[in-house]
Image 1 (tube, helix red, strand yellow):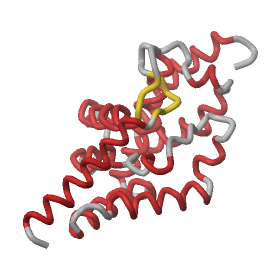
Image 2 (cartoon, helix red, strand yellow):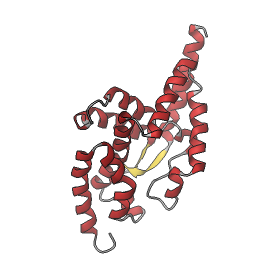
Image 3 (cartoon, helix red, strand yellow):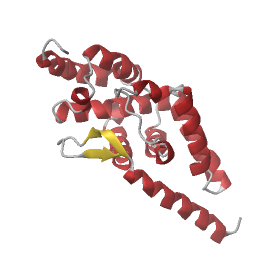
Image 4 (cartoon, rainbow, N blue to C red):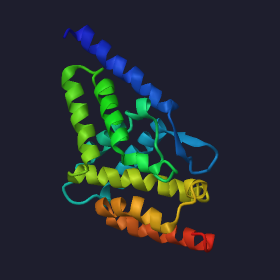
Length: 202
């Protein structure tokens, strides 16, 4: 691959990645004014990793976590966002969704020069598997960011999808607690207060 060919491949990937800004998520901005897009979500998560680095377990490499978070949702360019609390939430981790995301990863990362394609794909696979310390912490941040947006916006998707506190604990809390227990302890207290204030339906 010539230098010019390499640059052409890199810019093809970067131009394709721009489409992530058009993928709308269920979660709103913290002020509730509009839905966030997946590009904004990825940027915000990278910032979460930088700011909350002192909450990472010993040995976690924050630079790798940031890299994971910047690319983790690129597959949504093809697959879209499947909200974890929606009526179709079961599709979030279904075999069909996983297969679609694998195909998207192959296509999107395959736009890069071969060495970068392999590196990015391996990093994305590591995040998806959530088996290494870096990936577990990255997954925890990915789950907690929408919780904070919902708390700031007056309930957000919890209201939209009639989420219960038990559902939040099962779908989100367990994953956050696994990678960042102190963060979940802090957030859980505030989430519990919100659900308690919602009345019997919570």
